[in-house]
Image (cartoon, rainbow, N blue to C red; front, side):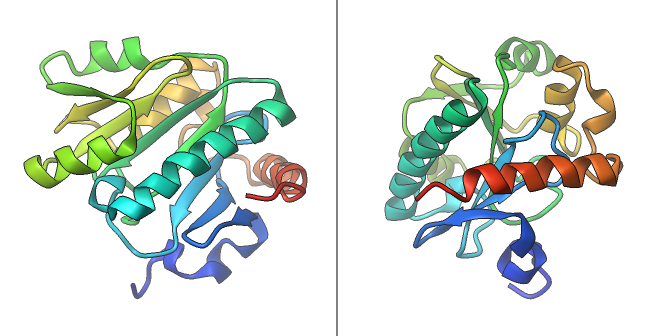
Length: 201
């Protein structure tokens, strides 16, 4: 799609950690953690994971597991996984966030959106099936050791998950990737690329 950052490889080439037939693994701008924070981005332009095709989402589940394993080997931390499914997206192209951090965000999300319906899922194909039926904006979260959770139509601000991740880790200044110290950020994402490029995805 024209003018989409994630449809133009040249926009993130230097942050590219790896790729598969269907996905890019990209070190994110705005490394809230001390490195290892990546995005899994479909090569095909699609608005959110819920709108992806069955074969793509099956491959995405596998890639998430592989990426979590690599991050655990490199950073010795479990990962938190999330997606802004059309809620608070700053780039209108699906992307899953994976950040190595020994925290949980579920309780905070529950407090922030007590009135919103939610669904627990094991595989992303369930997210796709529910999204096809409901066609509602959503947030998706998977804390370490817990089932995935979809929060339907929450009144979340832009970069909601980034904000609560940064606050939970005591680094609120890193929440907005546009405002993060560019020198520190480059050091962290460059280190992420260096460490992850050695792996086959």
